[in-house]
Length: 75
Image 1: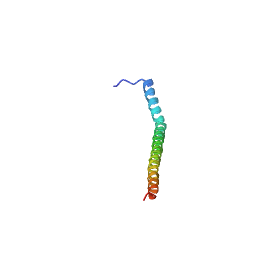
Image 2 (image 1 turned 180 degrees about the vertical axis):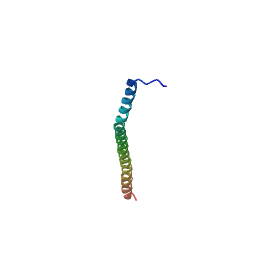
Image 3 (image 1 turned 45 degrees about the horizontal axis):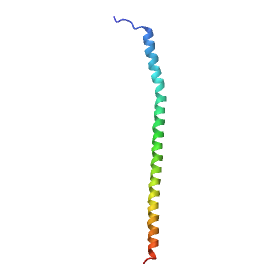
Image 4 (image 1 turned 90 degrees about the horizontal axis):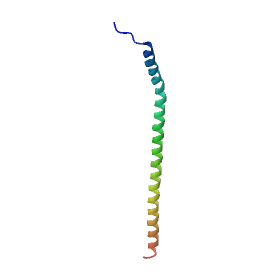
């Protein structure tokens, strides 16, 4: 017959398992919050970058339009 396991050992293992199972939902929600905040931050960075690029293009278009307007009198 196998030697009986000390009840303190089984209690410690049981308590550890209960602790891990109890903390799992909180860790999952925390991970979800981190991922969603990171993706929101990336979306805002992309929006700012797009706006900066459009501002550069706008400046070039305005500059070329002014150049074409000024060249009308030269002809």
